[in-house]
Length: 120
Length: 262
Picture 1 (cartoon, rainbow over the protein chains, first blue to last red):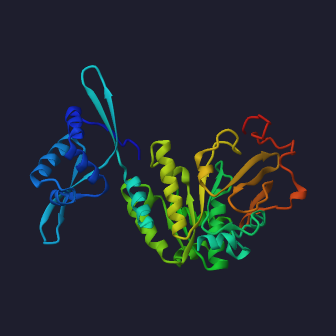
Picture 2 (cartoon, rainbow over the protein chains, first blue to last red; picture 1 turned 180 degrees about the vertical axis):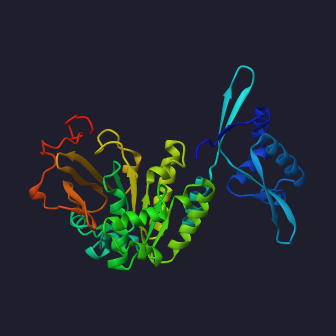
Picture 3 (spheres, one colour; picture 1 turned 90 degrees about the vertical axis):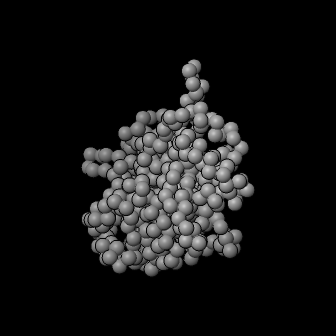
């Protein structure tokens, strides 16, 4: 149930990703639902090649996760991603910063989804 | 709609708990769509009270019930109800008048979201209007910080209300009656009912205290309570009993008393 917190392996690339305008926006968009690169590109108005590169960065930094392949309306299989970042805690140690990530739990997700349904 | 109901809150709008004595303490019953916290130490009768509340809904009002338990199996819940004389409980479950989501359904975190979706599907139909969660304490263990616990309790209350439930949330408490440790649960729910027990030479004395009930008149005395055949029974004749002056009863936590717990 708890134990939702982990230390991210590459803190510098995490900070790098967060500092990039596109990456930050992609990360936010993926917090709410899973999306494909194409949809991110369309909804956020970011060039598709840039989206692919940023997704790669975010994935490597451990901030987003590959969720699987989804079927599009025109029957194509596309990779979809999602973020489970609930909180990031950055500590500046003498040698290098440490980033701890608290994961958004299943329980949180289920209640949030049920709650959104009633607020619609 | 909502405001109309509040303006015309008559006896008919009240949800009868069906527990002898409690409905008169509550001046007719619980407010429709309210979420009420039932706190007490282990063995004080919280689960029995919940089981009775659902049993009464089915038998007397044709209202279906949902029982969520993180701690027991469906069979445990049925047997506990039967052992105290609620003989139709099993039948209610078999007829789907009471739906039990037990620890098998709820405890695995991966299943938790699935269960919740299932629960919400069930309650979309208008036939279920009473809910017992046993316990809120376990529900809150899914969340880490105080902030998260608060946020998700509020959302849960919202979801229950929106789906037309009048709910009892059972909470394991450490203290007999709250003194210093009033948790955020007490503030966030519509009402608080405390159950307590104390050992005596001849057995156990039991008490119930309805401490708060939003937007309704209640009797805030502490009343003696019994658990016997049929479940919980409350002696609501206030003239016969005053807990606060009961010197022979060492419950601790009297206002200003400063005595320790049991």
